[in-house]
Amino acid sequence: EKQRSLLLESTSRFPIPPGVRFSYGTAGFRSDGLILGSTVFRAGVLAALRSIKTGHAIGLMITASHNPIFDNGVKIADPDGGMLTQKWEPFADALANAPDPQHLLDLVVQFAEEENIPLCGTQSAEVLLGRDTRPTGESLLETAKQGINAIIGAVAVDMGILTTPQLHWIVRSRNKGTKASEFDYYAQLSKSFRCLIDLIPENIVKSEVDPKVLVDGANGVGGEKLEELKKMLKGLDIEVRNSGKKGGVLNDGVGADYVQKEKVAPSSFGSIDMGLRCASLDGDADRLVYFHVLSASDNSIDLIDGDKILSLFAVFIKEQLSILNRNENDDVFNSLPARLGIVQTAYANGASTDYLKQMGLEVVFTPTGVKYLHKKAAEYDIGIYFEANGHGTIIFSEEFLSLLHARSDELSVSMAGSERHKAAVRLLAVSQLINQAVGDALSGLLLVEAVLSYMGWSIVRWSQLYADLPSRQLKVKVADRNAVVTANAETEVVQPVGLQKLIDTETAKYPRGRCFIRPSGTEDIVRVYAEASTQEAADRLANSVMQLVY
Ligand code: 16G
Ligand code: ZN
Image 1 (cartoon, rainbow, N blue to C red):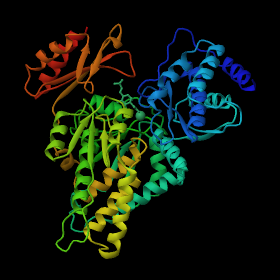
Image 2: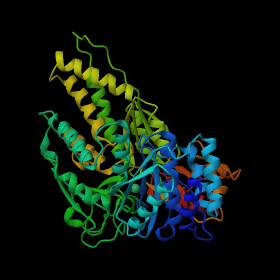
Image 3: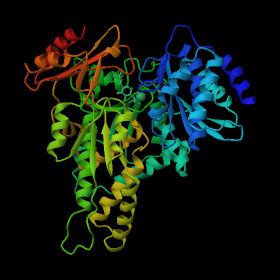
Image 4: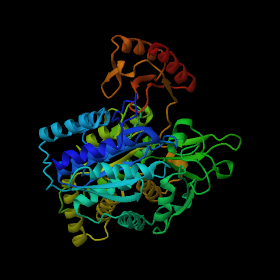
């Protein structure tokens, strides 16, 4: 009874704006930050219920990632640090759109019953809150707290300004019972980075590798946090630009999304940086791309996107596995077989997929959205996933990690200092460095830097792993994006019926042509992607398929 009146009373303080429908899309709820109050309050309620249900800490992040500064959003992290289980998304939608407090209460009561969530007032729940640097973030975080406090027994812990992956990492660590503060995050990353650097083979020609990396912080939280991390790093020279402190606007002409989509240098980068290794984070630092400036006259760049970061990681991991399992004649150890899986989406450049397959790697595809890629990657001993936009990570199964620990211990006894021992230690260090909860630009950046040093590769050498096929992306405004239904990891249109045939006919006209369309999960549009052997052909293919979509 007390719970009912508390929920009714609190909900009535955050009425929903008229005429808006909220949907828990690929990346949680997103819209103009000023109309998100009711949604964030309700996400707080949801997070508290999720924590009661799972018996673990839950994360709630206020961010709109790479979107403009006045947008905002909210998303929930599950106990393992991953995305909210898809099973709860319909409930999230229903909650966000409940027209009044009574409807909301009815939904909560009904859902709690279905899911066996006790609401008797004796249960406990913990929700960890984080936000990025957006102007509406602070008040929305307060609103989320009120939503959490509307469930009796739930405790809200304000972790302050964080990158999205930091919050996911903290939730995961907290629930695993390992050290889980923001400081612990920096300590773990810098320690494992150091470990990888210390194990670089002496015969590596280091001359080719510039110790300096220039980083575009998107005028967001990432730059600020990278400055913190930097204080604990040795052996790497990081220069942060667009840290947001010099008046630049979040995601405005800066950031990984801008750099990847426009294929130009972000502001405050230019011809003076030609030849230097540059990286760009997005507004909440869960995406990372690299680039180098090509031309002094315009801002054109050579883009090194998520596919190429993936390829670099795959080369490195594969090499370490093969060193670990190298068959010495007097071998007393069995090999430690590892199923290594690579996960991409339809946006992956065809040249990257060819390259990975040529290396003998298993490549699989899922629809766009981290929740799909992550889940697929978790099916392997080591799963590496990346979206072309720069979001991705490496995940290790618990079973494989414990075997690896054991092997590393054995080797440290009989073969300490051998290449095989080092390979085991390196793989363990990667599992500590890379954020296994979710894609993380800061930890990804350190791993890229460590691997380039290990390989002795310049950014140009890295870029030459393969040549991207020219591609083009277009957006089409349509009356109803949900009229387009896809299958086969978004590579095939099943509705409207007959459209795929037309796309196929068009695509067949171009050498190396490939084209797909899909409804966006974050905007009210349909996206078109085309690639072909020349830029002109890719443009033409995209345009003619766009005509078919109208
Ligand atoms: C969100 C997704 C990202 C995906 C993008 C696609 C997460 C954390 N983020 O940003 O993975 O690439 O949406 O947007 O899942 P779209 O559906 O509008 O093309
Ligand atoms: Zn982001």
